[in-house]
Length: 314
Image 1 (tube, rainbow, N blue to C red):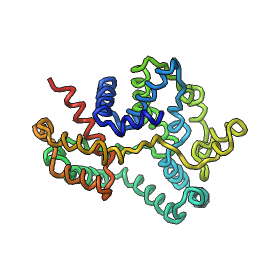
Image 2: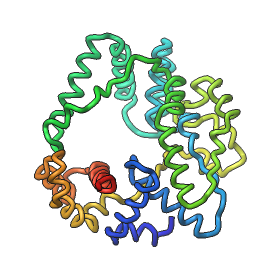
Image 3: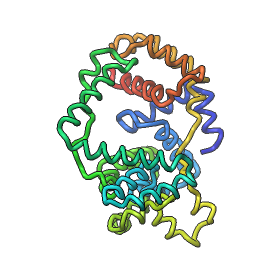
Image 4: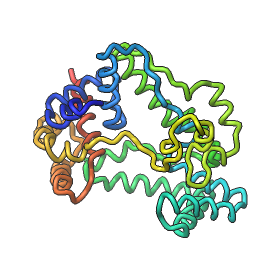
């Protein structure tokens, strides 16, 4: 995305909210993050240059193991198999390149494995549900009776091995959501979006591979890295830092968007909806602006929910 496009979102909040409202219209529901809005603008930029077909890397993280959270799942899988020495070695290689205490990561993996084992016990599950609802009841932004409508949010016992988690990532979430976002964003601009990493032959092959071909030591997507040896620059192939889709949202909400959010909080629609503790939200908006907390995601979700709700109003 060009700097001009980002500046438009950052310096002209009214236009940014118009773009967000347009995104909500094409998606028919709130989106998960600002990255969906940026993706919408990227597709529009490509279409404006005469591009008709784009290649996209969606699916690589979920199929081959790209997210940082999968490392702990991999280590827990090794612990479950009784491979403690190998777990210690893998964590050591990871920490030497990503940072963090090797001992602390190892102990955290053991705690995580223990919680997964306990999650099969009915008493543990009842306690977890109680804690989830208690935390919902305490959420400072919402009226007290909103929590009564929350689902328990605690999944049923499942296979928590890395392979099973990757399969659920592909079949249930987050990948289905990302694919839907990609489809809506591309079709909004009459673009065809092709996803090489979702080729069923590749997915079938990777699912047959052992866990250490997906993550190994410091590396995520290990199989892909090996396949690209000699085909892409080594500086790219061996980079351990995973880049997401970052945009300076904190600055936007603290700066150009601040007055619009204040006006939103003062609106009759928000007050009459009866969902919010508006004074608490105003206090947190000021704390965010002063740099005491980072509530970027929360304020983005609040803004887009209100825009979406107003689209539904008669």
